[in-house]
Length: 216
Ligand SMILES: [Zn+2]
Image 1 (spheres, rainbow, N blue to C red):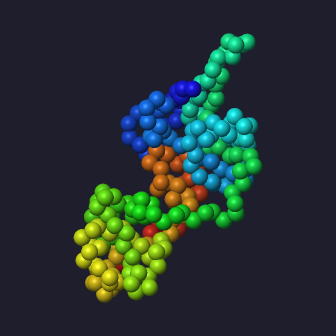
Image 2 (cartoon, rainbow, N blue to C red; image 1 turned 30 degrees about the vertical axis):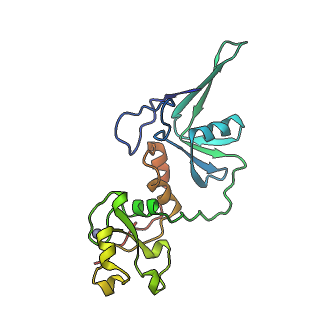
Image 3 (tube, rainbow, N blue to C red; image 1 turned 30 degrees about the horizontal axis):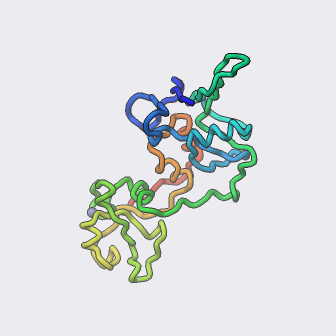
């Protein structure tokens, strides 16, 4: 099976030409946004997982122009090659999300650094992920919990300097208030190769609140 790029899909975030080939690494291929049959956002899935939904006739409806054309074997009788057009957003039958409330994004360092756009929230400088750490605003030694609302991205130097103290105790004010990302924000932050149709759809589902309150 080979995949040909469709000209109608442009990457929303990635720089460079919209050329996606299955040969070689698949890691940079755009993913498909999956919804349940009620239109609730579920998660990103690979184009292979999306192809399985089509093959099982489990696709309820789709949004956006096709972004992949999958070509399969030649039919011996008709002589025609099988073809499957994959859409960027796919709602699956019998794929209802477990609850009506959106899931809460898991807290891990990659997601945390993405939330804080790889900035140290103490000195304000940008670092690579290997130079960043997870800082507990209220230190765990003082009862602080390991939750989104109590963790920020910090460079190693600032984290070391702060030590087991709160920002007030260390005289190191935070540049922004830590918060728990919504599921939609998490999906945007966790995918660097979002197609334009997908980004439009996700943006229309963002919570209507400022992403972050900057402390004065
Ligand atoms: Zn710093």
